[in-house]
Length: 422
Image 1 (tube, one colour):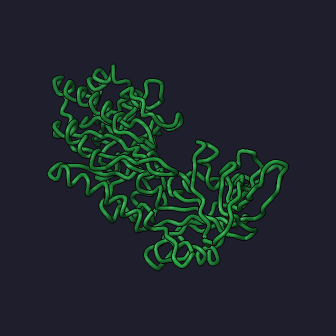
Image 2 (tube, one colour):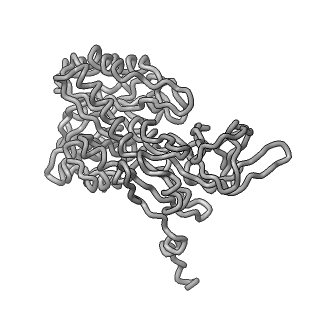
Image 3 (cartoon, helix red, strand yellow):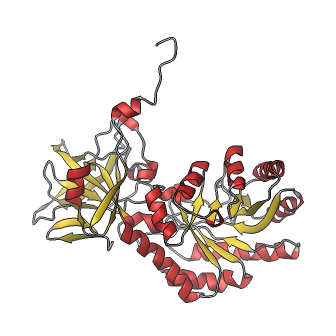
């Protein structure tokens, strides 16, 4: 994580001390590095350009991983498109300055209003995931007198060999259309007004550590596209999704040159534009969650480190049993101790680590949950009436608050008593 290093025993985000951010913004707080975001985007772009310099591709950041507008704009300004999954994310993408012809709309449950907005903004591609969606989209586009550019998301029935809750390309998963009946659905789509069927899409999961699941899925998709072309369909694009794994503990991420070489070998001969949708791979290690130690509590059998960050701020450990390295903001020479690292929320599940060997800490120490830039702030909630925590973006020796912490009063203002209680 080149954006987060120790300088004189203090943890820095680029050239800003996290201690300074904690003092001026308060904790808990998310902190993102512009440098790491751009390095991650550049690493994928460079690998693609090295391996297939003349091929047409679109890197569309899966902004569900971190949808802060400043984070999105950082990537959009570097050339990234956006992969969106809601009408709200469409508005965010446009607010971040993303050109409509770089926006791809995925998702299994799009509404009439969301599809209408996508058509009206003439976005690059809508990935259709069911026959009812296909028919609804045709109806909307026809009524608007417009044409929607679409790909059909196909479920290739490939196990991504990742966590159960983030696998998306198996036959039993809710996403996409079964590859065995996909050709018939393409035939149906070609008959419907208001649609321009240009592509095929897939996405098999997230935090994928091996290239072999991608190879299996790519081969199946290439076979499908070749068959579709024989049936008269002009398939010009293939959306291969994202899902590149990153390092949280000891995982080895996919070698991007090897991944690009796989694309060149299997997919590029189709001559299609290749669309990629990385999310976590860009934002994950670009962010940390900064927290203060509230108490050290000696239990009957465990020592608890109670932090002011909680599961409503970072739900991944509770939801996925995910691991986030915990670094002290001030690096001291000290002994280690085994801690259960927990938050203040009234749930036993509000636990980040169990029996983890860490440097000894004291009440008031600052700690950083590393690799927290993806699915941290984006999945946070107001549980226990805890305000959503601030987000900060760092660039070299400057930082800016890019989401402020609301007061409890501001939260309560959004609620109303019914008239019989007023």
